[in-house]
Length: 152
Image 1 (tube, rainbow, N blue to C red):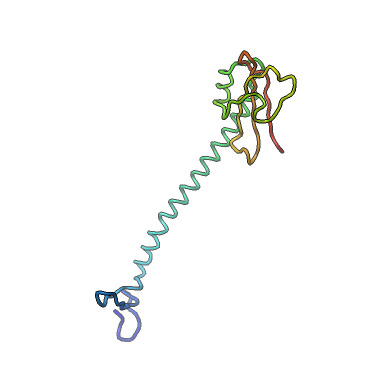
Image 2: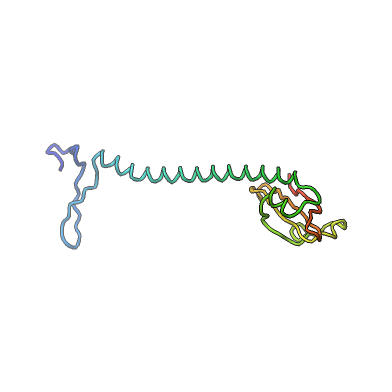
C-alpha cells in the first residue's frame, strides 16, 4: 500500500481499483523491481534461445553449403569421358534431376546427338549464385560430356 506521505513503498508502487461485474477488485498495476526483472527475464530467455537457434541453423546450413559446393567441384573435375553412372554417383552423389538431354538448358549442339540423358547438379547457392554441373550420358550409359554452366 502507499505510505502516508503519498510516496509509494518499495513493495508496491501503486494499487488501483477497478470495478467488474462482481464488485471491486484490487489489481496491482506496478510490480516490485525484482518482479519486473523476472518478467523481463521470462521474455528475454526464450527470445535469446530462439535467436541462438536461428543463428546456429544458419551457420550449419552455410557450412553444409560450402562443403557441398567444394565436393561438387572436386567430384566434377574427376569425371572423365567414358565413366559409368556408378562412378558419377560415387564422385558427386545423387543428382538433383535426371533429364533428357537438352531439356533443362535447351537444345544442344549436333555433336551431342548420341546423348540419352543428363544428370543435373545445382550448386547449393543456386539460383542466387547460378552454377550448374551437368553430366551427359550416351546410349551405353557412359559419360559422353560434362558441362559447367555458370553466370558471372
